[in-house]
Image (cartoon, rainbow, N blue to C red):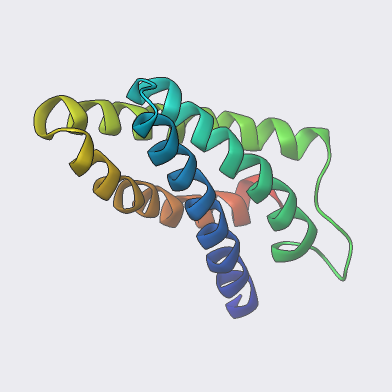
Length: 125
């Protein structure tokens, strides 16, 4: 379990950097918050699904990937992306883009905590 928590944290950190970097770069270039958040989340999720299935939740060196797990991952990703996108749009509308840039790692970090439990017990089981 400790190995999985540490692995998920390391992969999540990489995902978060990629997602946040895309979001900031795209919005700084003038793209609206919603499509920029979606692009960042797709980039991060693409990396995270593979790394977590291949390493974090692998069973005796055997990757835990495949169609069924991918579909579960996509279903959970859609739900968390909807929450993340709503939050970024709300923060941008209420407080501006700079605060959205600062808040994104916090929002997505909170969703990642839920993501570990869902990944361990549903997606990669």
